[in-house]
Image 1 (tube, rainbow over the protein chains, first blue to last red):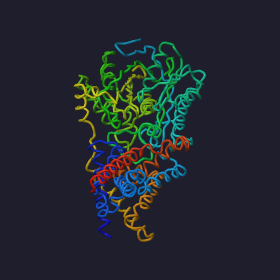
Image 2: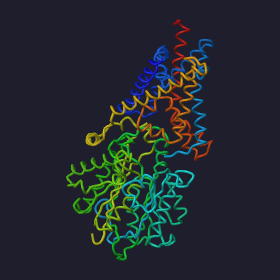
Image 3: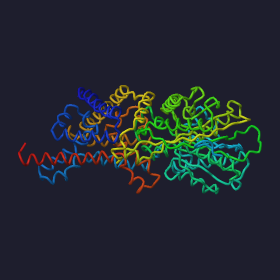
Image 4: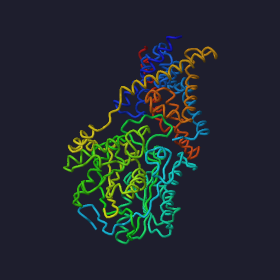
Length: 118
Length: 339
Length: 159
């Protein structure tokens, strides 16, 4: 268990450093940076590289936004295996639903409960 | 009268009878807190939105200026003001409640001097006997419109600036030899300058050429140089813009003393306040001039100052469309007790 | 889009750019990267703790624990955003707080909270995806393309 914590910390940290370099050196906006990272996650899963990466790094690979791209491809591929091409569309949100649903639900709850503080 | 290419002289010395300056929590913790008439301890100020709080700041500043001179709104001919919010609604809504004939201005953060220049010209040439002019901004309302939601965890680079939450309003009137009151003597209207900077987080760097251009034009038109003034102060160039402007002016052959060349955005806040390169916003030059600087003039510290308000004429859309940032600067000279 | 011709800077503009760069405060890249590394790593480690919590107490497996873990992390980012802490964390950590899924939650929740003054339907509803929209759009579209290409290749040649 303990090694997993170490790798989660290190790998998660490294992915964030890549993001920081995109902010500071490439001068990209957060939207550009995060969109690029999501696409990278999708492409890596396309090559079958993200799952072994996640087995090794645990939360260090599943917490960064890159895992969102990976989960979308995974869901799409799972459905495509059983239902063919149509599965690409129907399966996408199966695996990743909690991230987006949680964000939307908590966003609305947040708007009900909180006032921005500036 | 027109002097030179783009400047006006005000031989009748329109006088600034009184001023009103309001601010928010950050300004209350800054260096110039004692020069504010009204300070709020939170950004909502008891209102339902940031935009309404923004309007309140301007209304309070205007009412304070009127009360100090015991003048009623019905005695004012014109209200000349603006802000940064879309369609300058906070100012227009405040004008609705003041019920004074209104010129709405947009010069971004140069609005304060655009207004003071126009007000001075009208008073000098008897187009009016009393004019209320000012500018305002509200940090959260501006961030919401131009950048990100205020609770978003974005990281501002060290070149960014902090929009002032505050309003500064002046009551300008015909000179009746009132003692120890500051008066305007000249103004130079700037033209839009664009030196190809496109980073909306580096407005100081974008605005410096406009400031340098207007100051040079002022010196050329009026046959003056930096030594004429006890202080030349820009609106919100911030640390980077100020140093760049000094370099530009020096390269153009003007002798600038850095100790007498300051910036309003650098005066407002303390070292430990997270404002990166300094304060900015339409309210920045207005609150510092109509509060702190005029107080210093009345105390005798300065007799002749040139205030150069600088504005960046961008919008969130132009940034997304990868346009550069055109900027403008307007200068007004203010003197006291014979200058 | 700005005309490609207009993007060429005049010699005067280029000269100014050189001058201005001398006074421009440089971003502290190394310091920012170190801060991003530690905060990002810490958030992921906390995510790992939450993941194990779900595995041991709620019988999720390593594969399926990802979903409730993301949801829990986003719940915490709602609290931090609502109490005005996430924006300060973001200024300190930069990508360290923006890249983890908590940053995604923060982008949605902060937009929702901000635009409540314009009402729930047009304000909150109309603006909630202001920042996260790009991530969702490109995530979904790139996944669509990748999965499509992969499926076609598999059906044609067999992988």
